[in-house]
Length: 233
Image (tube, rainbow, N blue to C red; front, side, top):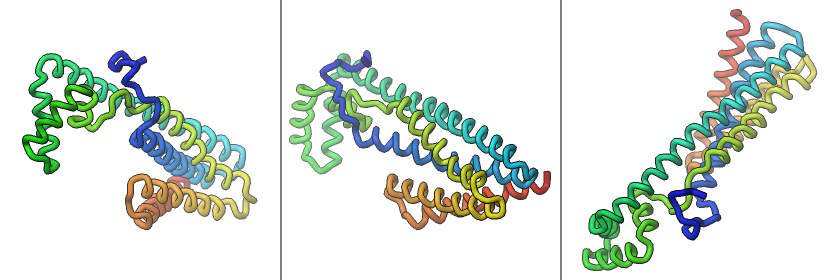
């Protein structure tokens, strides 16, 4: 149990931010898996016609990418979680040493939202009396008491999504008839990066067409660059 939060303060239901963080890690992992694997496949496939060599190279890159993405997400989200916990600890100390300052911070928060000074003061006093730590960390840091970003969920999400994303070009290149493996792989990459672009736009409330177009351009450039590398080498 987190030492910074009492058991009664912990809500087992995930917040929307926590869920979105896990989904974000999954979408990014999938996109990276697609692009890194197709990059290796194109470079190797141009250099050698040996299908087993191409498959091993792609599989090795898929595994490396998946574990790299997972470890990166774990480190990143762990740092974020440490920052959030440090903020909670700091506010806990301030509530014990300078309660008036915390009340003032809450009062200012409500005044900025159009509440009169008198009403804001009453609200602040009432909230600090009933739910002091929960109120302060929400007002000052936008956090919910007992809820921190979960590095393990982000890592697992990134691990499996990167592996799943990398499977699209890997299977297209190695299972398609040799005469059509290039076309099949290009199609698989275009479809899969379009899907990740769509999902990223939905998660971030962005423009779907722009996100899909951007991912398609990046995917096509990735294939062109690695194909060229294979020819040169």
